[in-house]
Image (tube, rainbow, N blue to C red; front, side, top):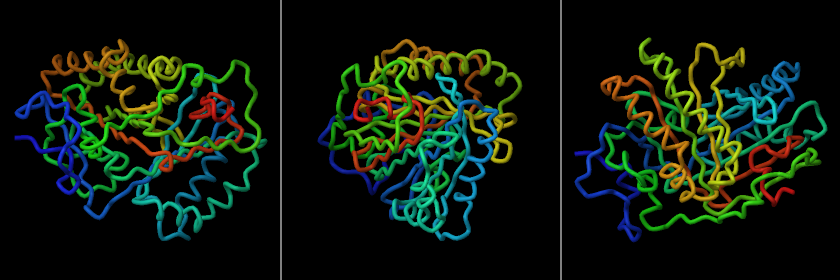
Length: 363
């Protein structure tokens, strides 16, 4: 019998219907969720990024080394519990390199920002410098957060702060299982604010924002970070993944990036994990999509109905079938549905298609 993805201390009587097909449903393959200590009530995920016109700019290394000093600072008692580097060249041709960092609570993040000198440095940045900067921070409470892994051994992102992995969970392998894994969905429909079509896209040719741009949070913004790791796959599976699954996944991420307004997606970055010293992806073989949707229902609808995701979903089943279900590809995701005060977006000198700058409130 499968376990519940929702930890016992977060369970409560349901007033919202579950999407589980039936009480005895058993998933077609095992997946697992991170178990956090009961005294953990909140997490922090911060995306701290630098935006450059090209990957070859000398300032690329300077910006990355500057952030590394803050993240590795020994002058704080609350360094990030885990951080790593990722990069992407966006659809405007700009090279974005980011640190993804995690803390166990907001107080720990704020203490690090003060003690390391990051806060003072950030506030002193000028938007007319050699490159742009962006800070996107999420502060989910545990009732608004869920994880799913296809293996009980790998740790990614917030998993580095977990106590252990769950047993194989029941809530996966059916449409709506993502919602069922979020503890708050037991009593809340998690409805967000549907944005009008024109809100998603900045005007063509719009100049770079001037000054600091802080974008307000949105009611029940849905954030998903969904990752892939094929480093330890067999030669046969590696070839199959790179020739079949990876192109389909890239196509889906490109759709969300370029046409997200059609499905309620504000922003999508399909990023490569890069080496901490070289900023190169070679030899790492890990990617992830980071997407922001106006509400969970929009993310669910894209997953269930849109051809780009159906190709990913159906492709994976064919992929597993060819491997006779002996899949060594590691996949995971982290999903959070956030209140406005659990989001922080700030941009300096970035182009108008960056992250949440696409929204009307930043114009």
